Amino acid sequence: MKIMSDNSEISFSNFGVYNLDDQIELTLPNTMIKFNRISENAFSYYRENSEGKIVEKIIPVKSSDVKIELAPIRPLNYPARRTTHLFLQFDKEIYLSENSAASIFVNCPIEIGVFLVHDSNYDSLDWVTCDPLNSRFGLYGSPDTGTLCKYAKVSMATDYDDSDPYVEAVMQIVVENTMSFGQSISKVVFPITDNSLYYQNSKAIIDGLKITMKKRAAVNIADVQTISLETDWSASPTWEDKTASTHMEMGLE
Image (cartoon, rainbow, N blue to C red; front, side, top):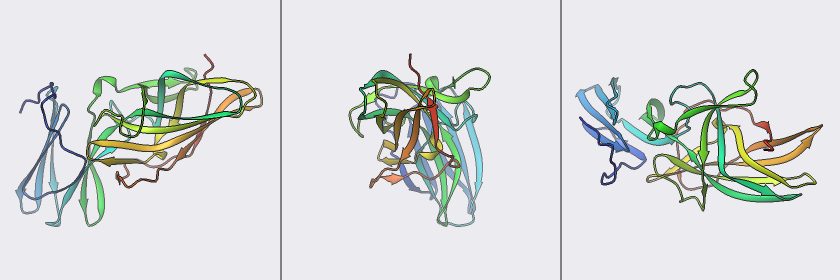
């Protein structure tokens, strides 16, 4: 099977739950996934991307009522699982005057998980990234004591519908400057395992953040907290464990 790198005329599969009967074929940007029944109690799994990389698995099942779920997940797996933190570098600085606040939307990278659903259990079967060229690590802080993060330079969005399907989720960020002078913010670093994802058709959204810029002793810091969304979109299954909230020292460059 050859996956075309030009996806302009391909109809891609939506996120959601699919019945696993005899055969399912799912198409994503640069990725093809196939399930085939090979016996009464087993399926084969086949995945190929546009670079020719193939993943194959045999999946024994105990029940005839088996489903799979295709859902957006946090971007922590490619090129390797090394961190729970995400480093979002904004393409435009956000300036807040003293004692002011603002709300923005940004496009946050995602990956896509394949889950086996049986008896109300969700088993993580596989994951893919539809944007491997922009999946990279970054170091926040000094080389000796800094935090390794997944890094992404992200653009601003206008609302929750303004994203690249299968590649990005829209996140709302509320920024508050409690200091007595104006301040710019150009990035945010946080453990993304505290943020749940939600999907509708091919679109994805993610729990938001509240960033409070404040002075602690002689250091300017930004406390970062997760804001849970209230939405009727479908929640993605959990992929990783949650972590504690964090704070970062603000970049003043």
